Image (cartoon, rainbow, N blue to C red; front, top):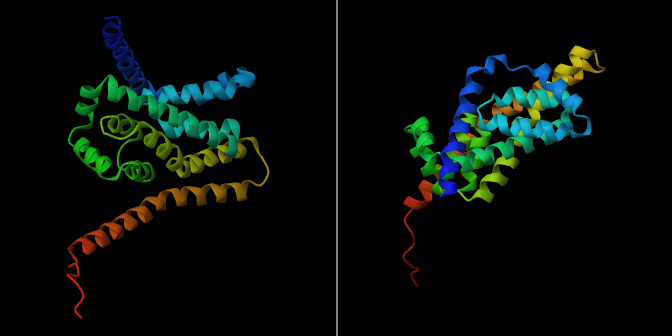
Length: 234
């Protein structure tokens, strides 16, 4: 009885948080976030991961948070913290959709949910890998939509963490390069070129994956229609 009363309250709190985040998303202050992290001292990384996870649940723009992570922690630790925060947030959204807000998520995703369900049921973690590499759906909404599929939670978490890495690394390094440009760090040209190379790689990777999937699907279709040998004549 107690759990039944907590469930609508929790759902209402999440929906309110999403509404507030969407309403005030243009007023997101990256400098204020940086001050919070710096004032937190050694707990700064944990605070950042928490903010990133909550931000993912309430539809804060992930690209802005990822850029902030690169500016605050550098390309290596920034990528790690961004990935951890994004994965935790994606997992929370997945669980909310599966156990709390299935009707609301289905309404928001509309006809695209059928496509997601079909892809997830046919390909499992490989489908998660594909949609993480190829942004066919908005990131925040995708996290909720995948919660309505039959994906195993462990497969979803591992595939999300691994295949969000290219985009996270590119945007994290871009945030780091931007901070270096503002503060006048050394090697700005090299860092800027590397940031552009990473962004170009992240941009062209979806095309490469899409062509590979198309070729793979055509080969499977060809193999399925190819007549099977009935036996060997002596």
